[in-house]
Length: 244
Length: 250
Image (cartoon, rainbow over all chains, first blue to last red):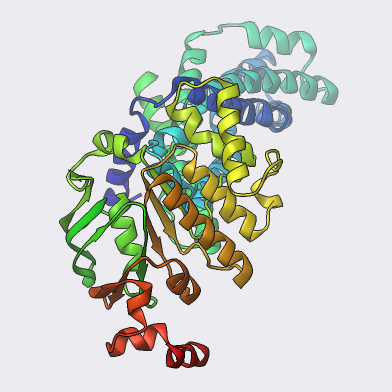
């Protein structure tokens, strides 16, 4: 995003947060988006998190082969990596692909088929009506998905570790419960909140200013995913730097 | 009545509208015609606020629309209905929900009252019973009629139509034209139609504004258009052999 785009993005956000014309309709739209973003992504996040947890356990076990390192470390390293980085960031990048491209192409198609013009002529604040419910759904559902992801990733680590014999169930459980710092959950949720905002607002911006036709809509969709992913990684660094 | 005064609009170095002024009366069908790239859609978009003119003003019954901000424009926009070239129906909503949309947003009516209004509008455009269909299930002509039904749902004082006949067969075009004319006369709306369809010009053009290269070139009625000797207008209106032959009979 260059400076002009960033400026237009901020102006769009200002329009997004104008007072809604009718709160009831916005809430209805928000619930629809929460269902799409949250419930609709649950399966994908569950599968990815479980496998990542299992693979992480195996790789940590592979790297920590030493008589001086207790095997309980496998559980605690897996837990901290999952909570602080893997669950929020991997979930966000996967969701940027799934939800970001959908948001960008939906709004972009509405732009090129004059549906956004129709909203504006009716006197409706199109950025607010189209984008605000998505942003609120994003910042509420992505943290919930990340919580599910954390749980499943740690559970996946348990399953993967015990099935392969890399770590015993008792050692793994002892590992994940030893020296647990609840603050890591706070950091993860702050990240998830920020990522939820990025995943919904950046693609909405890309879609909202599309000009042209089908080709431009698909290009905007691709750009939305790429810019979202880069922004997620940049925000990940900034939040980590600020909170840890 | 809508009045435009000295409207200018440029995109980068390209000046699309050059000092256009005109008055569009209520209760008559006002047409803006011109060749491709003459600036008619840009003028329409300047009038409804989708483009901001570089200079000039648009007055809705003496209320200057141009300097207003988004909030101030809302009151006037509630009085505007617009039919888009591609109908611009919301894909994810049914016909009923599309027409009900502005009512949901801006009125405090009960669901039964809104449904009555939807059914009345659908009846008005001869689409009774099509409430539950989605836009993808409609033909081009039906989409235009649903677009008209949505445009009149709020009882607009001003009705704008951007190329209402594009992509339609001649018979359906006439149905749409007649519908626009009937609604204009019935509700005394100020109706402005952008078109390059000669059947519309001859059929419903109570007042015609001809644009050429971004300038107002001629204005008059469909009765007067056949008797002008302006070369650019004649080249546009009587471009086809059929129209040339028809002109000879006038």
